[in-house]
Image 1 (cartoon, one colour):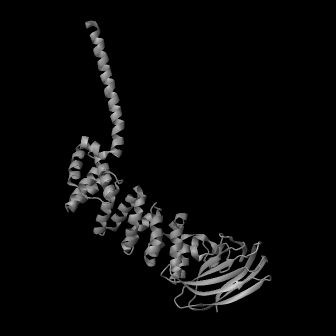
Image 2: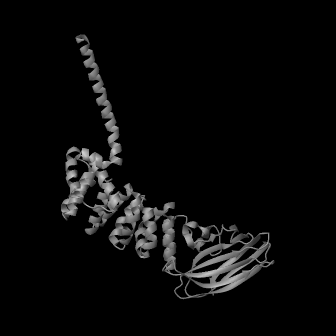
Image 3: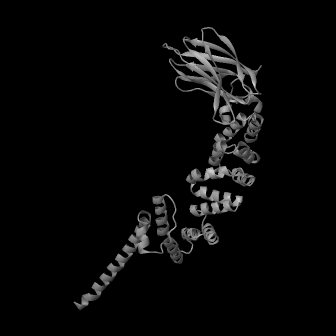
Length: 405
């Protein structure tokens, strides 16, 4: 028996060592999973686990819908720094602890330390952003705004309205331009919101010095909306100047020509450009210079073509067009409607409407549209109604003109 004892002890030692290695590997795999699924459990076993602490606080915030400081978090964070001295989340938690006790200097110091360790701590960035706003430090506001949205783009829903609201300050507009120059990923979304909610003068002042950097497709919705608002406010020359500055290939003279063609149906200009119907049994397409070919399916009804066009002051304007129809004409119909678009978008007021019955012979129609004072932009909509028979109707529209009498 004594002879076999060393062999038994060796086997036990090997088994124990194997078990220890296996347990270490199991723990190594288990702890990260528990940090995600049960961070409180990990924290109860190791109060210095910085990751578990951060996950626990985050879980609590999600459950409550807001951050509520807990003194125990600050104590646990200080303990975790012994084990993980460069934990950005622990530094931020201690910062929140100081902030809850209204010790803003120490809170700012800890948040700044968190920021120095890593700019990826979104909570620290938002806190520093708010601190910069309290101190009117506009460059710092944009620095932390950029850092926060670069990590969590979803924060744009919360932060964009705040940034839009402060574009009224010239310093903010200046601070925004470097980010627009390099097309920072969040700028397109921000500008789209500013285009509808900021004062037109503020947003145009922001972008004009960097307009040629905004030619990317991502900025089209914002730029076209700004141009549209300028037109509605009676500032059409500024609208065209902005388009000139953004797009090198923009031809102002060609765009302002009224008969529909490739130049003035440029979708980059949004509602100021011609839009042609393509739904509900209505199909419209350019078939030549200033010529529009429209197909009306039986019983179809919808917009054939539309354009918002700048006026040259109040007065009477003439709208002229020639219509030629093939197929089944009766009782197909075309109807024009004009709306005044004022500076309080999206408000519109119908100022004129007229039907154009379609016969078998080509006919030229001329109408007079009374444009009231204060109406700087007129939205013209051509609405079509298809035949009630079995055959579709094809209408050719040409000679379209809109002029002041």
